Image (cartoon, rainbow, N blue to C red; front, side, top):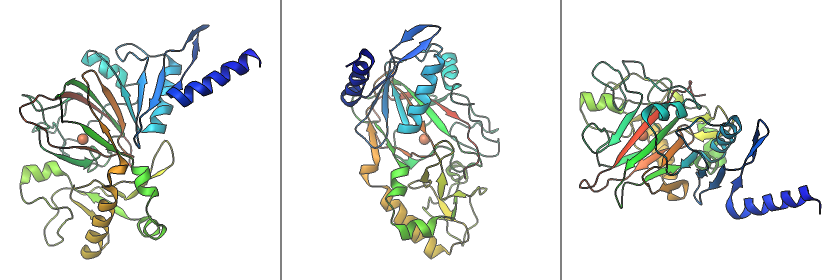
Length: 313
Ligand SMILES: [Fe+2]
């Protein structure tokens, strides 16, 4: 066996045993620190050998971006950095999401302004409390929903407060052919839950056609195509108020209930137990995220950055 063949064999062995080790060469110097190890769930890989507080090498960025497409969520362990360094790291992947001022989202002020970094915490200045957050993708109700988000864990409970991410490619793929054909060209309006919060009124899973809509409507495909991978995914939150365009109420509400029941199967979800220092980057198109309620006597403090996306198609 030649030397190079033996190294390839070792690489294959490492891959099978440990995940993927990446080797880069910049200006003649070789690096082999980056490791990407898939979780045993339907999404996710743990990335080690990266210091988020420092500039990354071009090959590292490319490998991370490829892994992001493959695994949909990436987990960077033991990270510590300033807000400025956090924003620098995020900028490798895109621009910060800022909604139009008339479309309120989490952390919008009364004028519609939002900070670049949102405190996802149950302490003063935080926005998400301790109650259950049903499975959703961030900013789905806006005309240009975020394509990705980051969370950085600063304080976490000893138990509880886990986040679950689903694989919406698999959710779609597992639908039967008749259902796929039936929903292929449907458009879905996801109504803005923050407008509902401002206006009050009963939360419903599907819009009552006898009442006026609670917010502006920005229809998106129910079956969307991922802009990077070209793969189809079911673009539907678990409990946000929705409505199918041009479909009768009885038929639309029954169809959405059926799809939601299918998508709620735990087999589609990866459960992330947070550790202080974790950074999780998630694909906000092909995953939903969910957080059960947790003990209000514990502290859970994370910082989120969301990235701007285009119009779903
Ligand atoms: Fe969220």
